[in-house]
Length: 164
Image 1 (cartoon, one colour):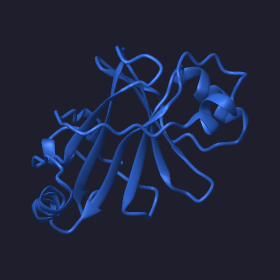
Image 2: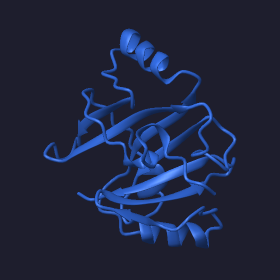
Image 3: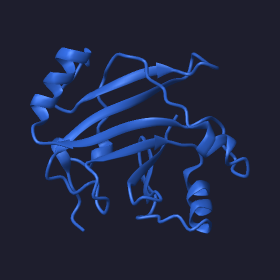
């Protein structure tokens, strides 16, 4: 399958844009409390919400005007600090995609969620043992590792282990 290079001319997970508001969605139940068999240093977070839209500029303007998002053509990035250790920063990206994007395939939904996780390779091995569909190999970049899975309803999910 040809890679969707998105609106930056790079794969979607290459977009790290500066931003303002603090947002942290903890996923203790799924990847920490529910998975004590994995060596996980920290809780996991929602890192990126990606959705397709007919008009990226119009969508960005609406969110900027009505919800105060500091948007650019790539969306916005919310920075936050961990409650248990305020010296540790994290971020959550909100990213609109062209309506014609193929990046969310094989899901038929017009969105995809990226979760920040720890120990991605160990997690992938456990997910495979549990019968979870893993769509690709773990890819490594200078800012982290990525892999895509499908949930029980066929929604594509991106998992990211950042370089911290």
